[in-house]
Length: 403
Image (cartoon, rainbow, N blue to C red):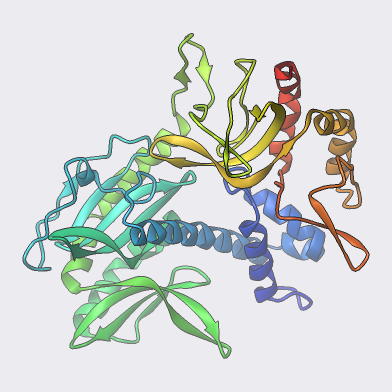
């Protein structure tokens, strides 16, 4: 690490980039390029590259944990967050105890995301699933609710790399657990550790996320304690977990294209309903080329609201198998769209040359003045280079759909 740049500065910068980005379109290379603008060639060293990779993987796993915990709090079961095949026949009935059970693989989900779940005990499971295209090994506890088991907050989703570290140290971990070596510790990433520690009267395997407090690592709330029998069940399931990871990898590389009603390849399903500015229904018009797919969760389309036509560039989210519009986005009038079309070449040139001073005034709205400066408001959307290029390709289709 260079003397002029600290590890914490890199971590903070990576997190800042990821928090405001479309994770489905952003690559690690994009992150490094953005960082190089701020820190220069220091980010090109091997140590910094490795740190960036770790931070990205940790952030993806953290986002997956947060979304799953959010769903658990609302008692909502969604295919991409709560991968329990048992939901097809109702939640799992609660057993009388949390003792060891024979390791049993739950049948893979029939949802769009391939998932496989293994019991570690009556109230603890490990699930192999994908989140935004990244494979995760999700360890989670369950709790009793209305005589059934529901996913709880205690848990952690490991990246494939972190799972690899756990596997490579499995024999040592088992020995430390058996001998009661409570100072045994394995670093899974810059922010995650596996420890063997005493909980009550029994030793357990603790997989946990840490944070900095007074210059020292302190354990956070995100994590799980595995009892010896749960750890043993996890070790026994390792080969099957690896097999499921291979299935996910193969599926990601060879995912077949879906066909629409005319037999043509379909990029993504169009939303059945949409909301403009949070309240008005959007009706897609015109061409079969619409909506223009900018990324897996971003689209551009032509919509109508109270007799007025808009070009809507918006981020979507999935709910119950449908893509619904989120709050992040902007609706352009035909005149604003015309200005954007005319300036498209200049925008692309500025993007390629990284001209941070380039601006195009579409209207006087959506910005506000403070201390003599024009600042961006809440309404709007930021596109990465790939999304902008996809929008450029879709401009003719959007223009053709205008009345």
